[in-house]
Image 1: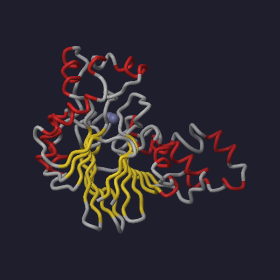
Image 2 (image 1 turned 45 degrees about the horizontal axis):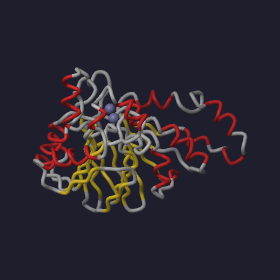
Image 3 (image 1 turned 180 degrees about the horizontal axis):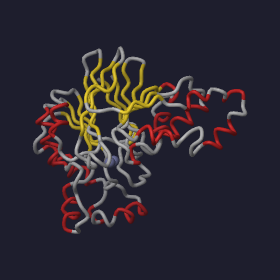
Image 4 (image 1 turned 135 degrees about the vertical axis):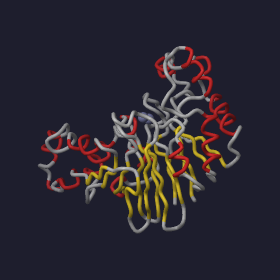
Length: 296
Ligand SMILES: [Zn+2]
Ligand SMILES: [Zn+2]
């Protein structure tokens, strides 16, 4: 299996990190977890043809995890995709998809392009949506994907899933989606080869947010992440979904200033994050960046 981190930021536009997107490649098949901003372009940059990606799992319906989905479908249509992708996501996924393509937001684009002989295959614009509940959510001859609820948005508003993939080759990867520390996710991730977990804010930013009353719930801190990875006995840990606190971009620093003190922002904060995770977790740790690749 190969893991390619296509996007590693949170919700604010980051020039150096795309929104949440992870490609898991098993033998000759590609499975996408989340489709945040820039995911499709990032596939091309990672030498993956989007028309070869047939299965998409959406952890939850926050825009930083789904906003590139219409682009993924439309762009791969004009790149001669042959069949519609399967989309596995929480309740609400069908409604999201229903509003996008024929008769939806991109209706005029589709009506225009379908005039061309090469664009007759509008079946690819009808994703096979499978809204899921916790448990086994997908199976084919190479992989089995399991989902559990995680602690992010209140369940009655919008369910959020953590996911685990087990392959026919005996490899396993789990992905937290967005979540506060969650026992169900730890349980689901037991002895996993690679845990990919969100780590949205460093401890120092969380302190600032507490004092400024901005709110810190619904995400996982580096110290908590170390404890989670240890409790799950994860062989490797990839921390991701960074809220742009390592940026040096002046506009982004200004945008982020209500969320954390500008003077602590910058690449050195990643060292603090790694050290805080490693207080507890002694396994192999990687801090994700776009295009980062792990071969199992
Ligand atoms: Zn997010
Ligand atoms: Zn979220």
